[in-house]
Image 1 (cartoon, one colour):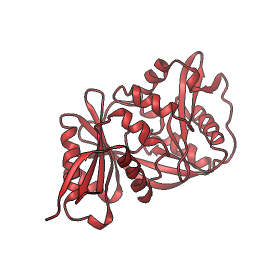
Image 2 (cartoon, rainbow, N blue to C red; image 1 turned 30 degrees about the horizontal axis):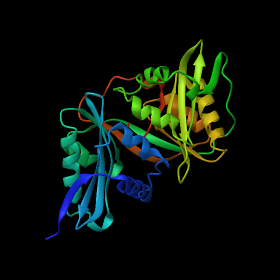
Image 3 (cartoon, one colour; image 1 turned 30 degrees about the vertical axis):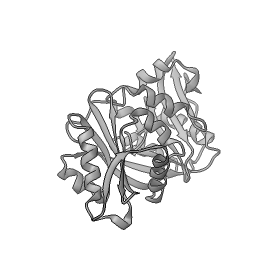
Image 4 (cartoon, one colour; image 1 turned 135 degrees about the vertical axis):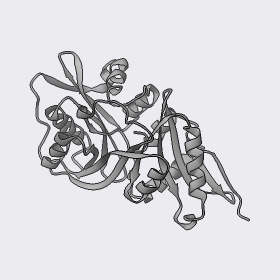
Length: 282
């Protein structure tokens, strides 16, 4: 009889999870998992069959009452044998009692609904080389986010996410190779964006802004920081101005996932959410 067990992920497992996600076509950032594990070191699980890792899932606790599931992967050779559902149960047990979110790929959304998740919106990945440079916005300065007090960045992020996530945000914006740009008007933040290198198109996320002008300026500056190559941003389809912006810049849809929750969707500034931080941790 096969020997299957579940354990917390170690350093080698984290690299393996990234490779598996890349093979699934998800294009994770080169250093994403370094930031993810800061958020909840015990929230990454690996399924091991006869001594070999065959599946994984992340179940990250945010603050006191939220959680997010991602990296739910079972290797093709062992799919349909019940190992994935055992990983899923371990993840949901770790997040029991919390409002849990996830970004579900199309072919799994029916299964997530069976587990109590309901779709709130779709995140659509738009990808390509933006046409045109960053347009200046009167009264708005684009600055290196690292030059601002971190407390200001954390307070601004809190408008778009249901819990404090300071350690994660500090890593996400500050890891080597990334560029974080803030938009400032009258001494206060009116936008924030981060671009990070990936094996495919450089990923932009989050992209927060108080309007399409600021969002467009940030996106152009972030694309420039990516050396003019292709970029990808996961845009909530409820934000019409965001969809219009990326379409006008010549980006094309390449991937789609449903943002789903186990209860009422958290109250956030949806109008200012032009691009989600990540599909793995929210």
